[in-house]
Length: 585
Image 1 (cartoon, rainbow, N blue to C red):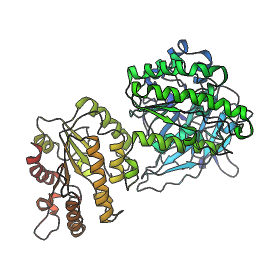
Image 2 (spheres, rainbow, N blue to C red; image 1 turned 30 degrees about the horizontal axis):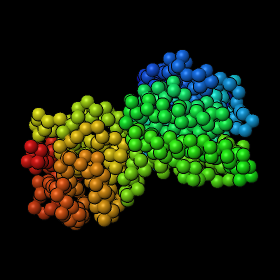
Image 3 (cartoon, rainbow, N blue to C red; image 1 turned 90 degrees about the horizontal axis):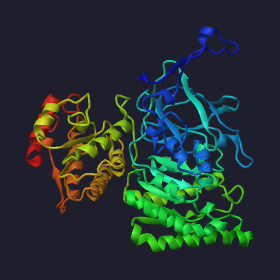
């Protein structure tokens, strides 16, 4: 559905050789800066910064050094998200400075970069034709969609790394679907660093290590890298402390060599205390990545070793005082000899190595359970655009922060379409829901088409954080029946339950056996028996079986209780509520 908040421009068709005027489709143009969602991602002060392509709010001009402010007007780490099913996408924009640098191509300094995510959460890069002029133009032709629907994909458009953007429009053929995606309310990873963090010398914006990290984590990342100016300034730490971050990354050592070595300890110790006075989020200190010519130059080796000695001294002396302080070493970064363009700034190979090292460290801190999961947690948008999966995730995070739910109903569309909040217009039996949970604060964590891996992603990304539930009911697995074996599904549910238990250790957990569905009844008898056996001896988990109330004597589903052989109708939900009632009280 095309949003009426987007500014739409009709342009005159362009004539191609051999084509008549009537054969050429028009283009609809969309401007993110006039859209009410303000869909500029990667900014820690998005609302305050407003309709400017910059990384800091306007008031920061009076707070930070002039070089820092000027660099903040470059759009490194900023990106625009949107949904479309267009076969062709055009991007046209104007920049504020020169197109290239001596050691960095125009495609990295001033280009844009497009990635897409299909309905199952798989990400792909999109190749473009591009032209640099007074207006820069990128065109993505013959896009193909491999989805369960014809509603298109989610796209991420990364903006230039070393240039400012004056204006930007995204064009799709007239009649194509187009929706901007609002910035996520999920807490970001905030990176404070140098030119390497800003993106030098990636060949295109998507190859900057912070942008690679953003895709790998699939969560907001804020790039506050400033070329030559990541100098641990007190004023900048005060700005960082304003951000409600999932994690802070301090990667300034490449700008703290020479005469600045003596400033590392006093500035960083002060900065860490400023951060900790406002936030309990983990802080990651990163060693100087080294100069890759250091084997051939003892002087270069000594320069970066001196900074790292001071950084380690701060870590050792303050880790108990600050708490939740972490450290990434030169050896862990593991850069190879050909990872740098000029002995300082990263090649694309170096950027990938940075991103891999950061991801391993950061995911280990934020998502320590992830490596123990047999499924790969991911988002999805298989629900044919009747709602936006990512938007529902944000709504739930916002709802949980205010409602502080006592009871959590976690599942797929069967849970989603029942009732409750956050609001779902297709809910089938909200009156049954309200009667069952009368007087209790409850959140509906059901998503249409969700599989085990999607539920795991949601748990890892905050949907059970910030409140203490008394009871959690889980109805999951039915959407994995065509994808996975019984053993895989049982293992995935076990791992999900363990993940939930670590997030909400005080809650009583109820695993509802996979509800009967048409043509799967016999398989589910066997699968559910294995599911019950999987939790024998686990006192914190109770397995509930609702099958008999939804099936006949022949074991087949009672068609009078279902709308389509899978989803209960109003009477079906009444049956489910009656079975759950003793456990809700």
